[in-house]
Length: 225
Image (cartoon, rainbow, N blue to C red):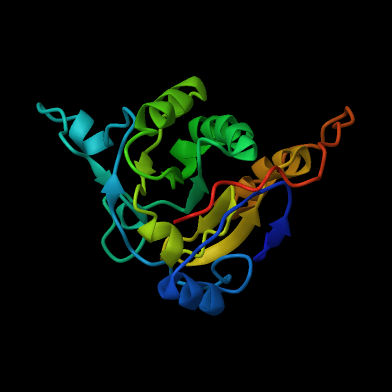
């Protein structure tokens, strides 16, 4: 089964993008983020968790001030080419994000050797939430890069208006799939969606029923100022 570009609206934390730049980004991208087929804007941001790039880990020196972005895994000159890159925007105050993170950690550990890359972008403002970001990633078993967009510049460029906001990118850095929000239904289908993008056969359907999560949106998230 091949998955074509998909947009799903599920349980979300609503954001408020302000300023003329945000308005232009939203108009260009549509109401649910970047359009399928878009070549994503490039950026690098500081890595805040304990992720160490493989090339650095193999060397004699530990990194200081590691930065990461989609160009590390996609585009013309990646450090390590990936078949599929999942990039998800989140915040520490977003409950659906906290449910999504452990599942992304599990999928990364299961499929990193098959060509999957995963990175998270925190849009928490300022440096005050940095320790909370680190602790949340650690508690979720995250072994991939978590970067901090503390001024929310990247969030505006990507029209990240609701969280979690997940993009699946192909090796060229083009958007293949967009998911906005996170529920148990999405969790149930996400692994096979990843497998399809990696060119792997789907897993057999689960034999037990999956309980439905309350589809109501969460309390509106803190506005962006």
